[in-house]
Length: 205
Image (tube, rainbow, N blue to C red; front, top):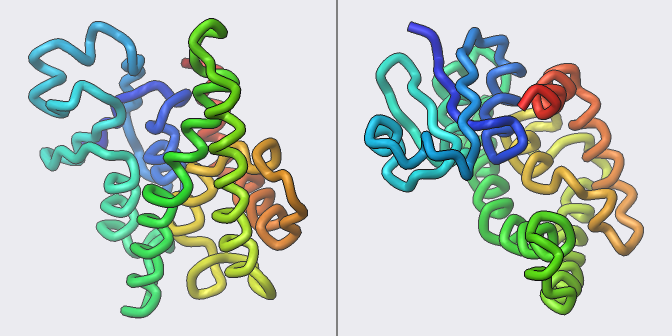
């Protein structure tokens, strides 16, 4: 059976698509739109009762939540190099993934919604500014963690870097201060061939 990844690349499905590309996994990309009627059909809700994307079917194992999916793919294919080699590294992968979800993504999403995603009449500039102001502190934490190192865990690219870089994919636009270490890291992550292939899928839908 082939790994199935549901969700257009212009959504959080980008994350498992990037992971699959990094790992060299064959997969079927099922381009369900996050607002599409197919996500409300019984067959899809049986896979993801939240009615959101992404979700994967990995040879019968169904997993939703994008960051859980990338962790699963990295750990279950540890030979692919995205997983850590030490218990300390595993702990740091979880730490940075949860940091991305709890500290960074909520603010990044609030900023994006009220600058680009929502219809203009529904955007609240004050909420965008508030989110961006608060996000600078999170970016400062990331920049400090990357001082003198190229990657977050074990000084090599892992799923921790993938998860944080994907959550902060608009880093250069959101950064109001000078974060040289984090900026260099982010560019390094997005320049990877697998990242380029995953982002290119956004043009295809």
